[in-house]
Image 1 (cartoon, rainbow, N blue to C red):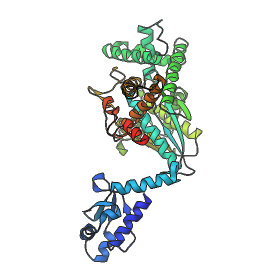
Image 2 (cartoon, rainbow, N blue to C red):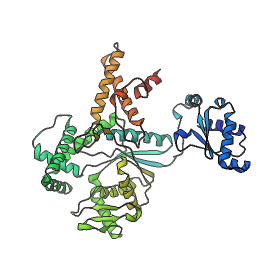
Image 3 (cartoon, one colour):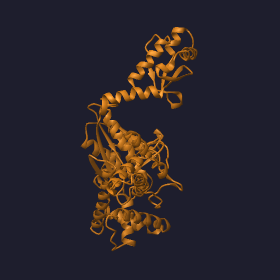
Image 4 (tube, one colour):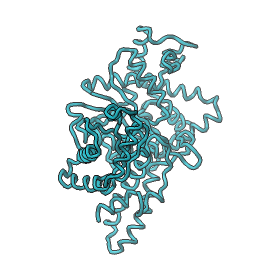
Length: 459
């Protein structure tokens, strides 16, 4: 990009710009690739910045722009926006790639800075669905981008292994599936199905909810009547997650578990009360009044004494800082629907005097034709189902194109293409926007797809 900017600076100098040329990136793609502000130029010409921009556009339009790698110039208010020629970009980029090889696109801007990237923050006793898949695709990319910019990256995960969803699942096992043995290798799916079944039942029979609260209380007390079942089912989830993470090339440096920070979260709440940051609210619940910051009321502890997500996340922030005291920034990758929640969390930590540099990066939901997914209702598309559907399409296409290949070669090639198709499809959409995964479009060997990009590279 530096070479391209130098070329554009030369173009502007040739058009009569005398002062230092500062180029910027326009705020919207439709405004071009590079932008030049004409405020200083206007002072020289003793006219307005808008007139200076229009005059410069006229001069540039009379030049042989293609030789300078520019396809179009456009004056917009006090700015002249330049659209770069795709041919020039390709020529400069390919030349740089050939020269720099694996170092192309890297820099040392983040040298000696450590960044934590926390993702996908999934839950035990639930399944890994396409929402998690989008999180992982974006998270893996963020890790690579930070690394390419010279940062020391520490990928971590925070596994919610002791929340209300666990109590619902274990209650469902005891009430509806006592004595059952899940299919070998399908334990995680079995747990997810029971969770969805229990959640639906409780919506229809709210009088049963106290029984679930009782399970939650016993869990937090490590009661022997529930703890062995919890440990066994928890391990099923963790084992399956690790298997799928390896397949998606997600490797965590460390994993934090809610069961390890939940009690510490209550101590943090007590500290906030002592500092008069938190107060007793209605019914004895513990709250933080954030209305003066436009962040409403933050609930830290229920009236029955149990914690919430905020309770545990406060302790998690303390635990992360203790384990990694020299971090430059801690990045949370969670869906955009949690934007407000993270604003509350960060503000409470700030009020408590914790000087953590924290950032939340959100992304849009993955929707079904019927609307937003929910593991609570069972209306969810699983990662494994998406992978298997894509794999079948690509396997059949590969087998047809290469009838002389062995089944093993076809299978290995199809798996690589499958993962490429999935990752590319999830990454080609703007992260903050809701997307719908289309397996047919993702597996096409023509167009803007993972398989076609690999085909083009191989060619």
